[in-house]
Amino acid sequence: MAEQTFDVVVIGGGPVGENLADRAARGGLTTALVEHERFGGECSYWACIPSKALLRPGNLLAAAKRMPGVPIGDSLDPEPVFKRRDEFTEKGDDSAQADWVRGAGIEPVRGRARITGEREVTVDGGQVLRARHAVAVCTGSVPKTPRIPGLADIPAWTSRDATSASEVPGRLAVLGGGVVGVEMAQAWARLGARVDLIVTGPRPLPRYPDFAGDAVAEGLRAAGVEMHTETALERAWKEDGTARLELRGGEVLTADRVLVATGRKPATDDLGLESIGLTAGGPLTVDDTGLVSEVDGGWLYAAGDVTGRALLTHQGKYAARVAGDVIVARAAGRPADTRPWSRYTSTADHYAVPQVVFTDPEVAAVGLTEPADGAPHRVVDIAIDVAGASLHADGYTGTARMIVDIEREVLVGVTFVGQDVAELLHSATVAIVGEVPLSRLWHAVPSFPSISEVWLRLLETYGL
Image: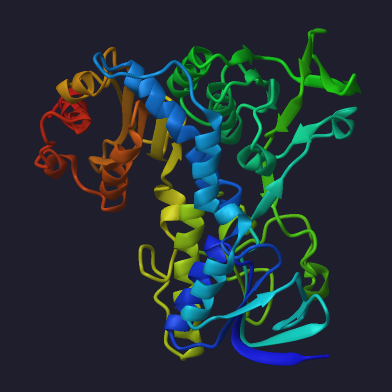
């Protein structure tokens, strides 16, 4: 049985694992990165990158239709869209990503890794990797499939199938009104599929303010998506090569493909956690340094979706950079300052998690989306009705919300809904992280004519 010893062994070669391994290697630690599928991970090949590549052409077509004088067609040609998507994903070829790993001074190891003891990882084939200082788990998450009679027997898609398919289904049913559900429903509708979206509540995006879900629902309907709200899938069966879906109340839908977009769970089922006294299947509980608190000895770390903290690629990469720096400091015997907002703590997970839904209209939010119960919070909601928006598109509609801690006079949450609002989000994130007083934020003058003028209107409505 082959054995190798490194300072750090990272399990999971997606963006989170790559970032953690990179920080460890930059700090002078020998580092192995183990990946059982593709270096670059879910985001690069099946999630963030290909989904946005599928969404962007349809968003541009809709935007062009809002601009008089721009010569456009009525529909998309799917083939160039698929080709461009495949260029971003390299058609699944991860050799460039593996080359980057080697170039960063990290040892790439292919195979499925399982923890088999303290500071010990065993890879398919019997290779044993030992860690002098730390093992870090960055295995991400996997789709959750609801237990619905017959669902396993029909032609179903996971999110991976939805982002990698190269043929437009005639009829697509989407189960779930979260981010994946609404993004893929709109993308495939604009590529030519007839889409039914099944949502349990009165609107999609239940974790966002009602105005966000309502605006996205309107955008979905404009794209041709048939909304089925306040219902659920009761049972499914296959008939004549297609799926039949019976909804609550008896309505039956027919679909060539069914996208099951009902959430994700941490990928911990086959990590060997039992060997160190942990239970498989759930998240790894970590402190703000990334240390797994339920394991003695201070050697096991985790970052990203696998912790259940913030299931977003960018937030996972942030936590990975923190954990990598912590491992380097502790390996060198240096104290790691774990006070909030130090470089050794992922404090933003608690206060300022930015997230974007890349539908048309977009939803962009950071921090609180609703005031906290009992807290001294004031909500300011206004329409995005500024010169920059009017020039951006005829009939531009959107909403901006800010939530203010009136005792400290700082922002604790901002939400934007409208065409192309994602690029407004980082300014809100900076304001929240920096705890910029509103009296100082008033002096951050937005450029004219841009949609960022909405900041001036928010502050004026507040009373400045």
